[in-house]
Length: 119
Image 1 (spheres, rainbow, N blue to C red):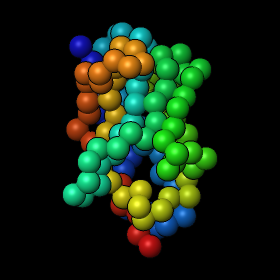
Image 2 (spheres, rainbow, N blue to C red; image 1 turned 180 degrees about the horizontal axis):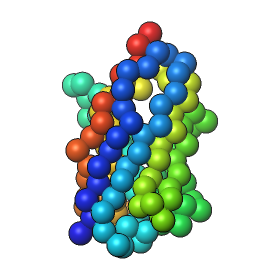
Image 3 (cartoon, rainbow, N blue to C red; image 1 turned 45 degrees about the horizontal axis):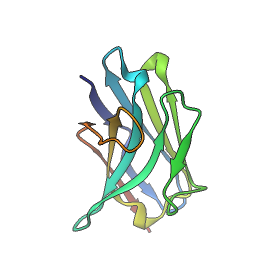
Image 4 (cartoon, rainbow, N blue to C red; image 1 turned 60 degrees about the horizontal axis):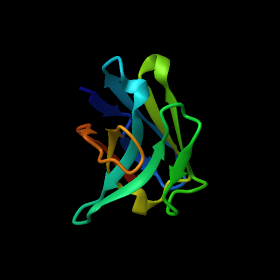
């Protein structure tokens, strides 16, 4: 069982930066792939990025590639999403989620953190 809690959201101007954190409980957190997703008002959930259990492999949506960086510190049971050059279209609730492997369903989800980018 893994419990996830996101933090770090807020209001930022376009071009600014934020770093989101996803803190996990459970001693087996390091065995999970972790992904970040987002959902804007009246839109479906969108994949943003994911990171392997070791942190050695990452994958990004085209819409954030080159601007966002996902990383993890398994000693702290935390995954980060560094977001730079933010755009108004990045405004959404951001969620982290954990899966046992690539292609497997994300079984554990956090409650989300709001990111608002003003123009």
